[in-house]
Amino acid sequence: MKMSKADSRGHYDLMSVCEKYFPVDTSFADAEVMLLAAGTHPVKSGDTIWVPDYNHRLPVDSLDRNDLGSGFVLSKSLISNALFGITFRPKTVNATNKKIGRIMSCGVITTSI
Image (cartoon, rainbow, N blue to C red; front, side):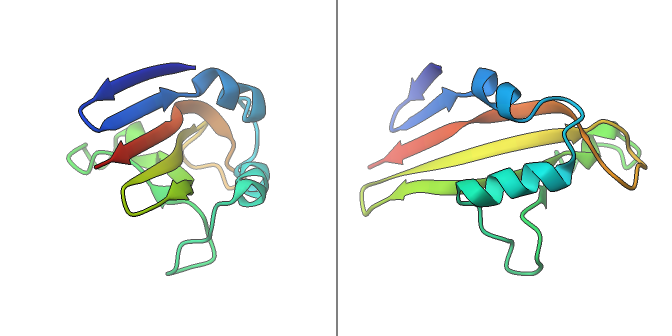
């Protein structure tokens, strides 16, 4: 696990751990079950845990625009919090049964006052 810290923010890189639990070709349905079991809550506007996680300035036909993210709060207080987040890139763009092609980021972000 690597950590970088700038001011009151820290980022703990968990890519090596996440690659073990979410290997390439894992279905998004299976990944959703694992993330729900870990503590992820569905997005309020729907029943899914997935949110688009891409740079909105990318061209519409960019493969990066299919990235999906999810995460959950690990701890929260008045002076600090810790959030787990993961971003996946689907293996194919138009597949109906989407599978993980790559993990783009995985880690814990901490902030404190």
